[in-house]
Length: 310
Image (cartoon, rainbow, N blue to C red; front, side, top):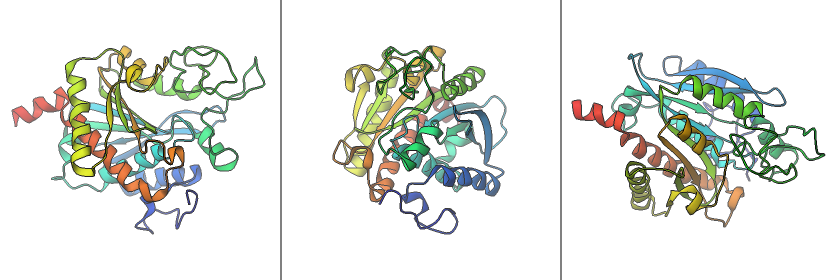
């Protein structure tokens, strides 16, 4: 069910965004989306993976207003979490087809959005061809016969055993994928005001170890809206207390870089299907995450200042 697709072309099927797609299909979709929406979508090559696959981030924008701030969203850092890239595709499609009076227009009018659909293309490819439950990237260790690094521990991680699923790598940013994201964010740290990393599963909205009342209120309102509109429950809180201690994670790293509003979303479900979430659940999972993104973005102080002025 997860690998069955009606079409690789998003224009030929109304259910394109309610299916999981291979890495090749996603690369095709990136090029097609940028070509079809030149005024809203620009593909940016930010680096390449260990196996030399390109890392494309899509810049979403509605205007060239000076001094605009930005949002960063990355998906697919863990290979087996297929709902994560599915959400990034869903989000880009939603933005690229929106009109100027839609609920997302206020955000895009004042902030650009950078979306990285698949941060771990080598691992994602491997889940389609060899091992559906693979988590890490596919780098080869010099000190071990085991393969791969957990990219979400590679920003400054703690586990130094190469054969574990949470191996942090030889040193921080040792992997080209995490290094590419880190370099891009360092280059844009004065612009990027909101960092979002999309994962699965367990239905949680998480923020770093150190936060203020602002962040708590953001995720609290997002969780309340999801419950109100979709009758689904998302836990929220600091990651170390809400899910587990995960040193070296990208949200903590982004927070330490100076991006105060940094969050991790854990999408559906809560364990019944786990990483094997059926395609029939994609639409609801993505709509829940979309609602959370819009809620948190609209509560960001930068956007609130524009809303007060208008």
